[in-house]
Length: 418
Image 1 (cartoon, rainbow, N blue to C red):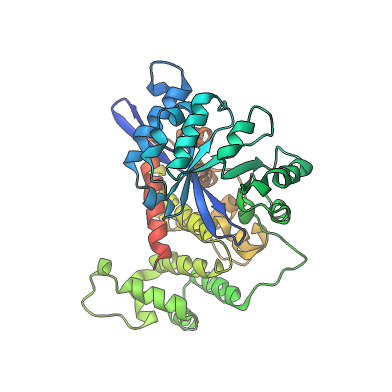
Image 2: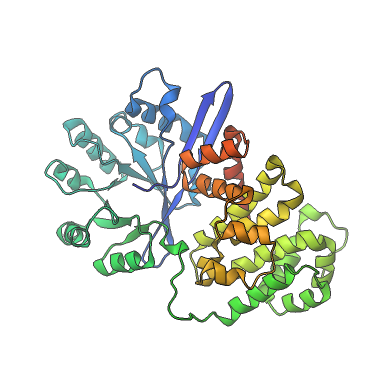
């Protein structure tokens, strides 16, 4: 099963390692319903035995006390994966019932202790989800307590996905489609009556002939083009920006914020650009214009773009790229441009005058820049194996990456609130 927020705090050699990733879960309006939260699978090395059930329960009981669920999910539902021991030892009640959805892993047996624990959770007002559900007599007793059934759309046939919802939806159970990796699968799940969707379908553009781009997006792309030109004409750029009330407002709000400590208020776009300087102006105007490109997309798409940009920028000094920190920020920021524009990355990048090395990395060409971007994406998706390999190749201390990702997440959220 594909999973995307994982969080761990591991004591190794006197240091604390924390890793956070998360995968959004959407409703039919493509609004965020919640996030799946999961813990890194290699935590058994913190325990004397090899019992992953015990390891998982101990880690869940202790680790999430370090994080604020409200902060991580922004008040949305948190899907928390539970092993049998987490369930029967009552650790799940550590989490607030108004935020938590207890997700029973597919290998949990429907024995008496499990059913009693499910009954108790339901009486306390918790919602329960069945993960990777496969219809069988052994799972039938759990259906009595299920609020949501998760179905793996890649592992299940179209007929089975349809049969499950026709069979059990009349009981009042909601259905969540997992591994929805394409727009086609998303539309198929909607037609079947699924209520929630999990996967990366929203980050893959759907190209129908030559899909037109809205006037607003064309304007935002023009601003990104101008700000990334080799020789920025600040006067001309200011005139372009002034035509967009939203970008003008956000830029002036940013430059007049407490962090700058300016004695006098800045009321001119051109003055704001001069104060920022070419390098910082390139970064901030690109960032603000990107949010405009995503007006008709799920917020999570913009949030991920901002997180990637910030994480790449923060890592730059650690991989001998400090002089190019603004450029790698743009690399992360632009890594989802194809989805935002609804066009292939090659086509979008043809219109942007950014560094050739950044373009090559965004198109998948191998090299240190691509490794850096893939490391950030692996952190975001909770792909710990890839993260560890790339961290080793880039000579990064793995234990520092979890905090870096959390800080990037917090920064990205603050940017969305500008």
